[in-house]
Amino acid sequence: MKGFKRIAGLVCAAVMTVSSFTVPVYAADSQTAIETVRALGIISGDGAGNMNLSSPVTRAEFAKMMISASVYKDEMGDESVSSLYKDVKKDHWAVEYIRVAVENGWMTGYSDGTFRPSNNIKYEEAATAVLKLLGYDPSSFAGVFPSAQISKFQSLDLDDNLTLKKGQTLTRNDCVYIFYNLLKAECADGQVFATKLGYTVDNSGNINYSSLVSGDLKGPYVYETGSILANIPFAAADAIIYRNGVRSTLSALQVYDVYYYNAALKTIWIYGNSVTGRYTAANPSTANPSTATVAGNTYTLESAAAYKLSDLGQYTIGDMVTLLLGKDGTVVDVVSTSNFSGSFVGVISSIGTDSYINEAGAKIIEDVVNVTCTDGVIRSYQTDTDKFKVGDVVSITFDGQQSTVQRQARKKINGTFNADGTKLGTHPVASKCNIINVNQDYTAAVTYTSKLAGKEILSDNVMYYVTNGSGEITDLILYDVTSDGKQFGIIVSKEEIYGVDGMAEEPTATIYNYIINGQAGTATLSGNDFSGDSGAAYFQFRNGQLIYIGRLTGITLTNISYGKASGGSKKYDVSEDVQCYVKTGPKQYQQTNLATAMNTSKYNVTGYTYGNEVVLIMLTEK
Image 1 (cartoon, rainbow, N blue to C red):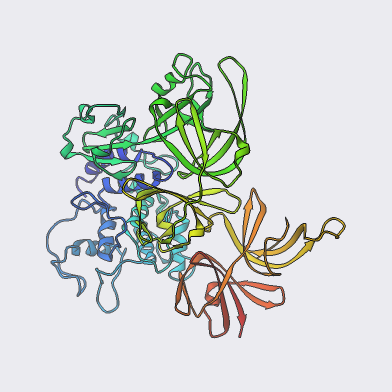
Image 2 (cartoon, helix red, strand yellow):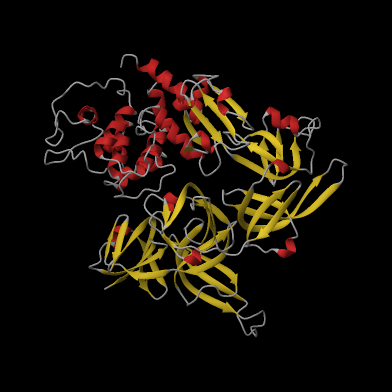
């Protein structure tokens, strides 16, 4: 342990300058987590700096990660030791890491005397090991392995930003989040784990990097012309460069990019993020604004931007402006839209009006479309709203003080996302592809290639896509592909209403009786969206109001386990939140658990899927 706190302090200095970065919604958590674990030496890149995040992690590699995230990280030596297992010889590269992990009880071998260092580590193995590192013993778990361990793991928020299932093997990307979450986790003795490593934390348990170092980060700077190296005290050949969270080169630098550097780390962070739209409000006032509202969203201003948007600057309320965003989403600078040729694409989620008080004191009211753009941000743009409807795919382009909203014809594509999200069928996907999934009510949410891995995307599920000069998909708008925002259950019965007097030719409304998560409910919807009288269904709510019911497709399941199921020759994922019901009689259902559903000798088992995932299981006794 000698020298640990000194080295830890130096590492913290590196982490502070990296992990304080906040980039747009699609990359913020990922970039912070990656750079934190990299700077702490928990997970490192290869010789070229690549993190290889899609690669699986072996038990030996996980042992090394655990040691690198513990108080033993500075005690590891190169001396040979006797092997604890017959398949880990004393010259094995991980023998010391495995020894320390085993001697501390974090990991164990198998009854046949092996450790199996080359086996890929599974979710439940990793969860158990991390809990032991935090000091939790078997008495801390209520239940049986592995459900009890996974439940405890989740209760400590160690699964933040993860969508792992029992039996699934971990990737390096999964481990990035696990060890990042570990730093903020509470140990069995009540301490935050990071404090055991010598770091200080704030009241929320987050590492307080700013209390350890200050002044190492230089910037922000806005690139306009010339060489970026004029401001940077190290050679380009030595620099590690990121642009929007992705390892890059200086050749990717574009006019009006914002950049920062850290001389000690020889690292440059470049951000090419901007917002263009009408400037409609300043707070607390235009005399000394600290925030500004542009395109319907409010942004925090740094000093240079605040001056330009103030009474003393060159921009006034009502102007079209382009905001240049820095590392944490704050506005670093403001430039004229005449110098900017950018565009957005998205789906109209609502249509309404916006208003502002112009420089002359007059109230201006404009018709606007509110567009959920592919980065997940809803932006408002003035246009002739009579030409559009909710659900239209549109592009927004800019020319000086004008923005143009244009409807886009549907562009279809199809294929299956590969395991690492780099391809959709035969089509390459950019490393930071912006993806939104649009629901039936045309609300939309950001999704990620990691969540779509292995999913088959039909052409009817694609509303629009954009490619770059290399043919990579950079923006993708999907329709009703993910289960986000949906609930699942059973329609028990329904009653159609034919007008107030019962004389209408078509049903004007339908009363549905349903069960969701074992709880009965009733709702009335206009028309009749759900075909059939009863059955498994998915439900779309908005602000607590049921707005849509759709039918789920059933398949006969012959084999079920935690996380996986099969029917015939086809295999499916099983949702961790899967609902299971036994049909006990006409319109009678009793909720049960997955363990009961596994008894295929007693029950006929029907699984209902959304995408390729079983979300509900119905059992009938044989």
